[in-house]
Length: 395
Image (cartoon, rainbow, N blue to C red):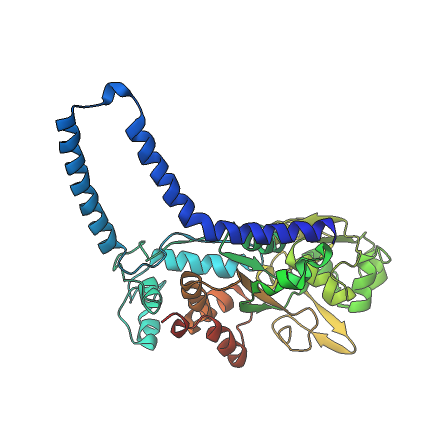
């Protein structure tokens, strides 16, 4: 077994240990703290009578606190913050969803929970309250106070995949499959089987160029030419009918889902060697770099295309078929199309399911997926994904 494979198995085992022993450890820690408080400082010791009186009072207070805690936690549901991390491609979807969830706007809020949508669901409840109550959570009835909050961080697909595997986050955002992200680590089938795949949308992953290049007449490129550019075999735009200007080939950082998918889809191997001139950690940074250059080309997530701005798309010609932005990038046979994932680990908790169902709802698909310029899941795939997190699974 390789060193990377051994590390992955140790991480998975450690995660299981932490999850199974966490509650017991906290209980033991609480017991130790109470014991130490009682043993510290002989100067604080009271008379036997005072000890008895204080003990009786402590017992009464403890009983009252226990009763209050049992009442407040009667549902027994986890209301701690739901955390996520990973892909900058998936981030616009899950982060926008988190913002709406945390806001918990009232029905009729024209910007965030319009009447027509609330009527579609037949409810006058607040947004997060409505979706959370399907999973047994008590509605709060208050703005900015959902049953539990959601926090989504921004990094890379590889970070999201590792984060959910290591137990650092509940949801790992990834724009490539976990298998592809761990392709170079010799992850075992057992480890890969522990990932629960939730597909929340589809990205067409277009090819874009600097505005000056498109205005100079380069509006399409073949996939063979694209491969040659990223192998540094074509290095000047004049070779493609453009201006006599060096090609600045930009790309995403290694370990990002966008980069992994590009190499897998264009070169047939997620670890294929390519030679971009510069790499960027996030789509946001890459978008800015393309906009500021006058000779750049890059692959990027669909949400970051600006047809009339600094990142106009190029048509991509593959086997005599032309794939164009706004036309057929979502076609089933478009090879750069890829699923956008929100992974959970080993199982999907009630809390995770409630939020993911929110993203997969008609409202979520329209506002968080299509609203961020991605493709909504087709009805058959959407039904399959919803079944994984259906509230009936938690009754």
